[in-house]
Image (cartoon, rainbow, N blue to C red):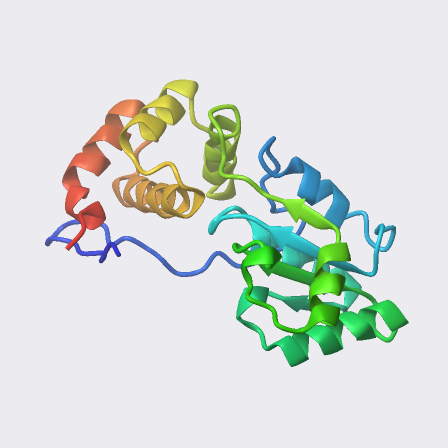
Length: 211
């Protein structure tokens, strides 16, 4: 795991969580649009219990928390780590209509959870699954621009292309890097240009080195 470090004079890498998990702040892209549109369509869901499935950093927690805020249902993140008793009970409550809805999220397909109860296996197998994927080449530029816009900055395509060429392309890493660039630009009272981004990355390369 990368350990953030900084030299004297460097801008510390801010890894604090991004607040305000709302549908408005969710960055829609081809890699997640299907899941996004289904989740925000609540209460017009096809089933009272649904599942988000996708790799880490694809937006499952963001979507789940945004849905939870409007539905007051139950959102279980990392559902694969829950006990079978808890899962079975929550699914049954949703099916009976005792709660407004149930949304599970996991990076592991339910067929790989090692479930021993046949009834739970059946319920999980019948649950609609909405998949979120790693951003592809078409998704990454709009996601990167939106991350800059969340910091109140509009950047050119040359900045986006440069950043995607020379940094980790995962959304969590891009978010952290863009917050670093924003902090550096604010400190220097500078515009975020390709030249400035290159300078910030050169000065902070050790922040992204593995120990």
